[in-house]
Length: 167
Image 1 (cartoon, one colour):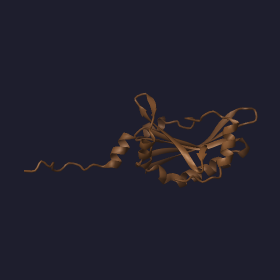
Image 2: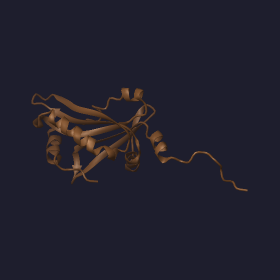
Image 3: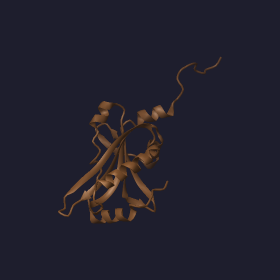
Image 4: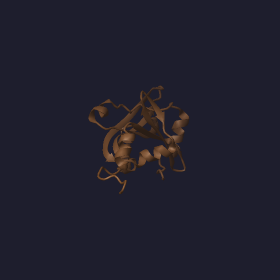
């Protein structure tokens, strides 16, 4: 006699990852890069608050297929000291984060074209997973983790703006 289970569904790692990371967020800023390596931060929603993810788990989020809301944003600072954000959002369904690099490049070009370079402090992306249209309608990620606007940050972006990220 065999103790082996008969029938049943086989394990699907993508479906499990989609459920586990159903409310995850990743972001990066161009000013926070060194030698073409970008620093990516990640967090997930646990109950009512967001919790930072370890780099190991963040890499699993990046490698998993999911529905993503991707936002490219440029932080602007004007001579009078006021700030603004120029952004563009797009939905990517059933994709891995690395699959929409070309989409991001196109979004970045449009965002930069809509702002004067002298006003740009930093450019970056943020993406968040979603499962349903109702959940997507509630997401507002344009201003999440914008960080303080400083001249130092602007100088760092100027140094890194033309460096293509490497893996």
